[in-house]
Amino acid sequence: MRFIVISIKKYFFTVIFLLFTLSLILFSVPNLTAAQNGLKLWANSVLPTLFPFFIATELLCKTNFIEILGKFLNKFMKPVFNVPGESAIAIIMGIISGYPVGAKIVCNLYDNKICSKSEAERLIAYTNNSGPIFILGSVGVSLFGNVQLGKILLISHILSSLIVGFIFRFWRRNQVDLTFRNYQSESKELIRVSNLGEILGDAIKKSISTVLLIGGFVVLFSVILSILSSLEILTGIAGFLAKLGIPYNLALSILTGIIELTNGIQVTSTCYQAFPVPSILACSFLLGFGGISVLLQVFSIISKSKISIKPYLYGKTLQAFLSVILTYLFI
Image 1: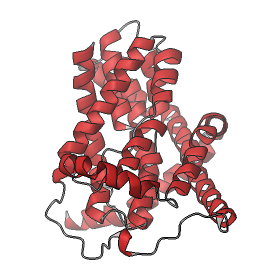
Image 2: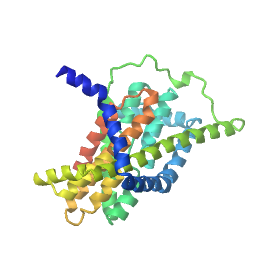
Image 3: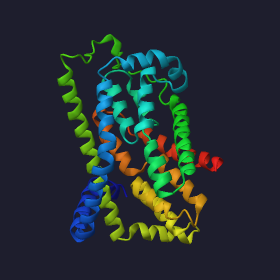
Image 4: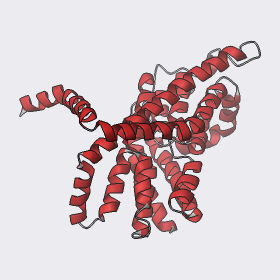
């Protein structure tokens, strides 16, 4: 058994990526269509929505705005969330802009010595959220055709995020990061007229790199969903869950959303007429969790900063269930 376990660990990724490559060849036609659709989704929705936010946050980190915000909110942020007041920018922008802006801001705060590693891990658990434009517009109006429902989902989403933040105030609260130095003790280069061009160019370069990374994940997971559909893996699992009493389409939507959020919610909306309350709760769960695609996007962003992905996974799982409870109470 020990030999088998070692062999699985050694060859797991080799086998997975080999099967993925073979699937790209075997199902080349549907995969091509899926990749094109993913690229269109990124170009039409993700790029114009997130790119300006990435530039704005990069520029804000080069001003004294975060320092002013910290002095103003420190008395609130420290006792409630056990993080410095400057980190409020991650919570605010994470709620306003959507995935994965919150993770990017947390990395900026950590890299600029504004928060310690344990504080960054607390923040990463609840500052990465679906944006109000997506929940109200795309989900509430476009998919479900109900503005009131969009408001309920948004309020549940934000409240569950803040509850997770309060719970995670206890994450490694006794751990002292000896390598952490307060950014106030360092001479931080602020943006001025003389260096405006250099800082602006650097902000655009970093933002382009991040948004291209996200685009790659969107296309990749569009192809992965196409392969799983061609192999009838998700439909097979959904059929098994249907025998246990879960409606087939609802089970398929949840499975799809766990892998990729947007596609999962789109499938969930088709169940709204037949199963109104379960489909709303499923949608709330998926919005809270975010999906494996977003998880890997966050992982790719924070990996360079050596921030652990565990609090993010724990926090989003907890937020998903809290969102369901709050949504149920509201409706």
